[in-house]
Length: 144
Image 1 (tube, rainbow, N blue to C red):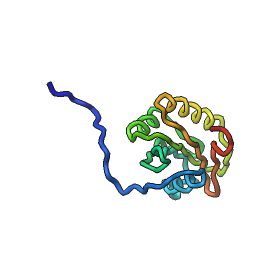
Image 2: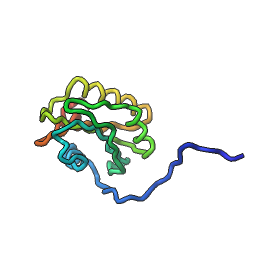
Image 3: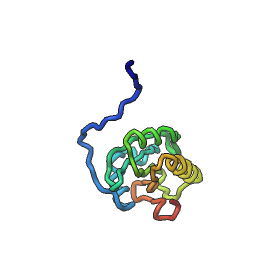
Image 4: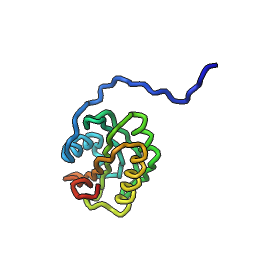
C-alpha cells in the first residue's frame, strides 16, 4: 500500500546568505535587508529562522499591513519555524512612524508567539522593531 503525504520534508540548496546572528545589532542589520523603501510606508512582519549555532537558515514575510499595523497569524510563524527545522527564531517588524516604543499589541503578539513556539522547543530569541533611524530589541529591554 502506498502512503500519500501532502507535505514532504527535504533540504533545498539556495543562495541564501548564511550568517551567525549573535547580537540584536546583527539581527537588526540582517533583517533590514528585507525592507526597501517601504520601511517608512507600511508595516511588515518577518520571521528569521536560525539553527542551533544561531546561523541563519531562512526567513519569511508573515504579513504586510497598512500605515499603523499588520495582522500576524501565529500559525504561519509556527509553520515556517517547524518546516525549516529552526531551533531559534527572531521576529521583526517595522514602525513607519519612527516610534521605537513597543505597543501593547507588539507585547501581546510576542508573548503569544513565545508561548506557542515553546510547545515545539523552538526558542524566540528576540523581537526587533525597525525604523529608518534605529531599532529596538525586546531582549535588550528585558522583555524576552
